[in-house]
Length: 246
Image 1 (tube, rainbow, N blue to C red):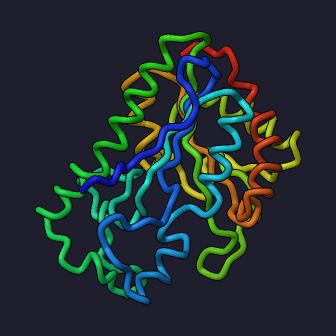
Image 2: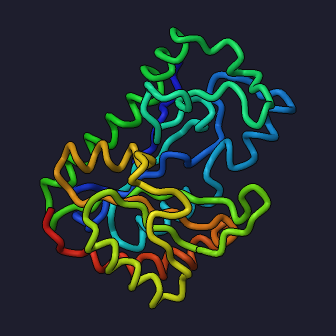
């Protein structure tokens, strides 16, 4: 397989304050042809985080930072879950079997880890290590999006700040997001305390840098223009992290 499972944008030597990651940047299937049923899942939030890649690119450009984005659907394997977790490779969603994952046994899951998951995370390690050689301290920020409705119930928050460390900075960021006009919640719509920021925790802890995950509601960023407008406000709020030593 010649497919490269990650994309790096920006220059770590430019020494912008952030390394952004986007674990669910695309719904691409590098090796498989989706059935009609699978395509419906791929096009939905199950297949990728709608708008997250556009927001990541815009934030990277705005802050003069760098980013690592996935180049495979989360249904191939989930870069934001540990390989030992049942959700690393999903076989079905809401009782709908995923056709291209039907025969994904332990050996196939291990192959996908080697082909997709490990190279993506290795790229984050390399890029973050290179970034830390230059300029002010780095901050690791994973970018994700969430659905406006879940189980038929509206989610009123527009931005969620997910963290399992660096609590005080997260509280400051919430205030800055509110100043930018966002309805902002802490550890919502998911809680990092439940181990749901695998990627940010893995790399932030390994390299000893500040880390967090941002969740932005999809309807705010579902076009490039909307994502760009949101990035201006999110980037302004993220200034609370500038110059903070880990």
